[in-house]
Image (cartoon, rainbow, N blue to C red; front, side):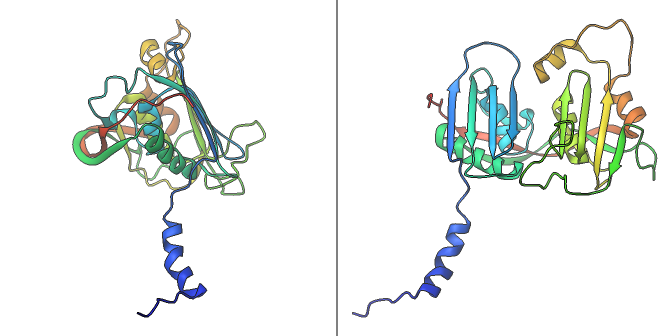
Length: 271
C-alpha cells in the first residue's frame, strides 16, 4: 500500500482555507446574571478589542451580534428579554466592531447553545429618503471628509471629545453621531420606532449627526433605559425632527424584512 505524501506547500494549500473559515473568538469572556431588575442596559465596544455589557438581555445580545433590531427576533422563549446579564469580553488584540460581532456570535453559540434559522417576512417598514430631491440634508446632517478616523478603523480611535469614531448614539430625545453612516442612523431609528427603517437616501459618506425631539417618556425609558426629564416646552416629534433637522423623511409601507427565528437556546451559567 502506498502512503500518501503531503508536502509542506501542498498541505498549506489544503489547510489554509479551513483555517480561514474558523470564526474568531474572544480570548477571555465573563458572563454573569444581573438580578438588579433595572430597566436600563448598556453595551460598549472599548479600545483594545474589549466588549462590555451591563444588564443586557439575550435578545439584545443576539440583535447586536447579527446586526438586527429586537423586533426582528422571534421565538417562544419567555426569558429571552426578562433575564439580564453582565458581560466582559476581550479579543486577542485590537478588533473592529464587525470582528467583535463575529466573536459575540461564537460566544452565544457556546454559552447559550443558540440555534436559529433565518426567514424573510412581509412586515411594516419605513423608507428613509431625502426630504427634497437633490438636497444633501439639513443643518443636523453634516458630511465629513473621510480621514484617519472612520468606522472601518480596527483600532477604534476616538475624537478629541472622547466619542468613538464611526458611532451613532441614541439617548432620550436625541440622536448624535460622529462620522457615522446613514445606515447606522437607520438602525437607531428602527430601534426607536420598532419598525425596520430602510435607507434609500443614496447618501454614502460619513456624517456628524445631531437630532433632538420631544420624547414620549415611557417609550424612551424602555428603549434607552433612561426616563427623559419632563418638559413644559413643546418640541418636534421624531418625524418632524428628521425632516426639519436632517433634511430626510420617513414613508410608511410594507416590505420584506429579514428575521431570526430561534430554534433552541439554553440559559447560560455564570462564568
